[in-house]
Image 1 (cartoon, rainbow, N blue to C red):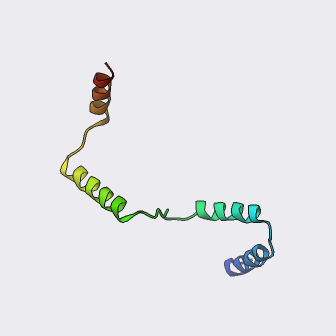
Image 2: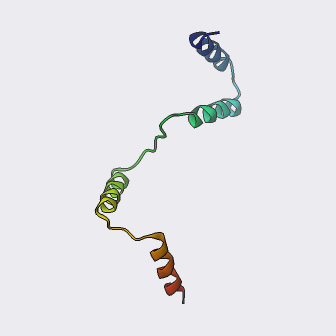
Image 3: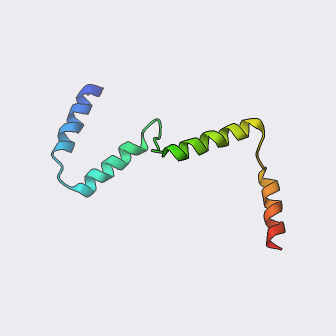
Length: 76
């Protein structure tokens, strides 16, 4: 069975399923195999990510070790 035939067979079989839980399970499998995950961001979230990325390129960040040290100081 080639790819086109397989797709047709799957579409036909999925079309006949009325069980919403089973269809959601199939959807979960299909979503997992997406090559590029998609996250719907608000304009504000997108802007904040771009700003953070730019800060990182400019060297404006704190290392994990530095943050761990600061947290330990704050907890004293």
